[in-house]
Length: 274
Image (cartoon, rainbow, N blue to C red; front, side, top):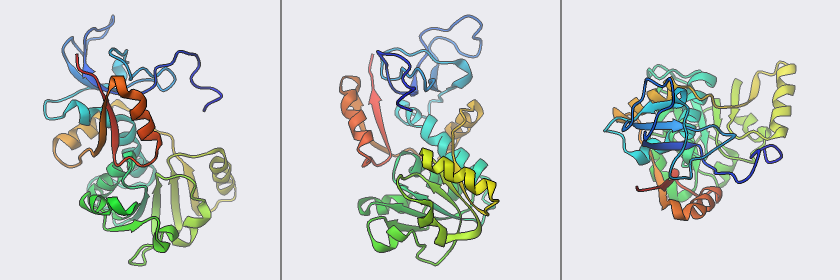
């Protein structure tokens, strides 16, 4: 999106926020000054890396006392992406009734840690990939099988139990569709959470040719009710946040660099104390 975003400079990056309401605009009746909230700011304008931010009430949910600000700030983009890609795109309900075989790549990343837990809530059998140092963490989140992506087995994305996948939640980058194909059921979806232009073109071609093994570019929908659901799941202890590191606002550049390194385990958080 670099040619189009940000639309102007200076730009304050960041979209996911947990904080306290200090003022409300005209017509806002669902929130009051002093309310603790979780929100997602508009991607085009950002604004999270700051002492104050302006949020749309339609994207904002009250944060219960049981949810820390750090945990709340991790939920919007990563949590919604995991929830919607599994429930809506892969078709796995969160009632434990699924018997689908699911592959989750980069399962120790910001989205992956939520995806493993949400898939297990649905009852899916989860095969996950991550680096060797995070294998035990991903197992503790519920994954049935974990592959070190640097091993031949992990590189091949092959289930240790020989299972073929109904769907792939593809959180990693630079893995071509051809690498997934031998491990897919005849009817299956590879849900690409970070699609590049080549992936979008490939997806269109497969759609036009009625291919049963589909590549599906994913775009998150910022539904307030889904964010509220995620908060309830954390509150009830059904899912948890994994935090890689925390940085004060004065060190936001370091936080950004850590996130872009691709080696963070879970979420990177920027904090500001008044």
